[in-house]
Image 1: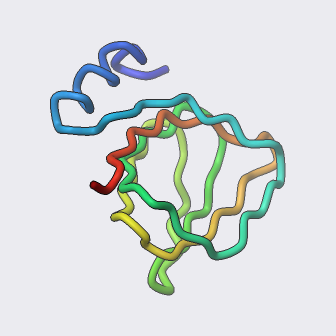
Image 2 (image 1 turned 90 degrees about the vertical axis):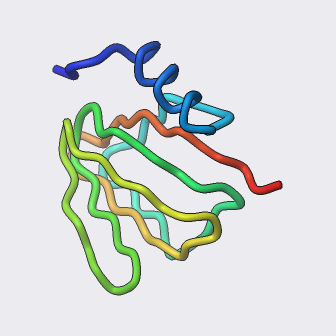
Image 3 (image 1 turned 180 degrees about the vertical axis):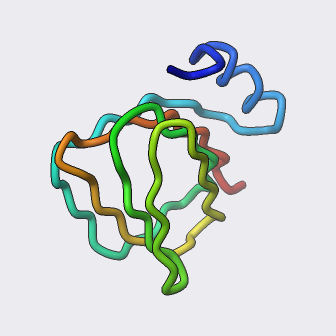
Length: 94
């Protein structure tokens, strides 16, 4: 259970300058090879498991954990047997 609602999370991230906040659902056992995004990300795990690899370091993230990625940061994602859901705030580059 999250300590805040999605709408509260969205308001907090927008106050920090993020221009988009999304709910992201990932399928069980999904694997996303190394890639980048044209935006910075600040996210809160809602459910499931995510193994996030960035700069050779892998973090196992669960509900309640947070992660951040800068604009164009190379990273890979692997999701657990139940998939995963997280709230992702994006700050697009100008």
